[in-house]
Amino acid sequence: MPSLDRRGRVLGVLLAIACDRAQTEAAPAAAPAETKAAPAETKAAIAEPSVPAKVEPAIVRAAEVITAASLKRVVEALASDALGGRKTPSGGLDAAAQIIVDEYKRIGVAAPEAASAYVQRFDCSGRGAGSSSNVVAVLRGSDPAVASQTVIVSAHYDHLGSTADDEGLGRAEPGDTIFNGANDDASGVAAMLGVAEALTKLPTPPRRTVVFLGFCGEELGMRGSKWWAEHPLVPLADTIAVVNLEMLGRPEKDRPARMWMTGKARTTMGDVMAKAAGEVGVELVDGGEVGAFMGKLFDKSDNWSFAQKGVVAHSISTGVIDDLYHSVDDETDALDFEPMAVIVRAIAVGTWRIADGADVPQWSADGRPAAN
Image (cartoon, rainbow, N blue to C red):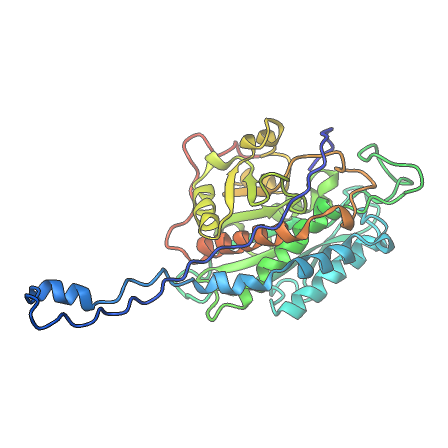
C-alpha cells in the first residue's frame, strides 16, 4: 500500500480453530416389563442416535498444511537482507521471483501456457531501468463446465530496496539500511503460497481454475497488476474474482482472529468470504470497522487495477497501518505467525468457496468503480 503515516505496533496471539465433534448417543436400556410400552413413533425416536455434528469440508482439513512455521519460512526467505529490500527492478527482486517459482514447483501448481517459466517479464518500473516479472501459476479447475472461469489469488512481492535508493517512501533508522518488507508484503506472498498449497491438498481441485499471481512494482504505483490487467496471460473476461493479500503478519492484539477487507460492501464477495471464515472461527469485516483510515484503502492496492476493469476484486489485510509500515524495522521477527496461520487458513477456505461455489461474485449497486 502507498506510504501513509500511521502508528501503533500490533502483536497477536494464537487462536486455535475449534471443531466440535458430536458423540453418538447410546440407546437406553429396555423398559421393565411392567412399564407401559411407548408408542411406536416414540420408540423409534429413542432408538435413533443423535445427529452427528457437521462433517468438516475437505478444505478445512487441507488448510491445516498452512502453519506458522511454513509461513515464517517463506517470509524469512523473501525478507532476508540478502535480497536488499526487493526494489523494482533489482537482482534482489529477481531472486525473490525465483523463490516464488521454486515454491510453485514444490507445491505442484503449473505454469500457464503463455509463460512456461512461470514469469511475465516486462519493464515493471516503467522507467526503462530494466525488466522485472510478475510470477504466475495455475491450478486447473475440475469441472469442465466452469473450469474456464478463474479466481486470482495475488500479492505483491516487491518492496522499497535500501536507504541508498529510497524515493521518499520509507522511514530509516540509524544503523539499518534495508527495507525488508516482511509484513509489506512478504506476508501476503507467504499467504498466497499457503492458499495454493492448501488447494492442492484437496481430493478434487475446485471446480473453477485458480491463478496465483505475485506482482512486481506495487510500490511504484501498482505497476505489475496494471500490466497484467492490460496484458493478461489468462483472459481477464473469464476472471470472476480477485483475492489480493496485503500485510497479514501483525493481527490486532486484542482481536487476533479478525481480518478486514477493503470496500467489502461494494460486492457480494465479502459476504461469501465472511461466512466461510466464520465457519473456522475467523471474523472478516470491512476495513472501516478496524479504523477510519483502513476504510479508505480500496483503491490503494493491486485489487484496484482489476476493479477498474470491472472484475470483482478486494484486498484482505489484518491489523492496522502501524509504525513499522515502510520502515527498516519491518522485519520477520516483528510478525506474529501463529494467529497469521489461523487467518490464512480462513482465506483458503473462503477462496475455495468462491472457486467451487455455484454463484459468481457480483458488484453491489453503485459498487463498481468507473472504468479506467
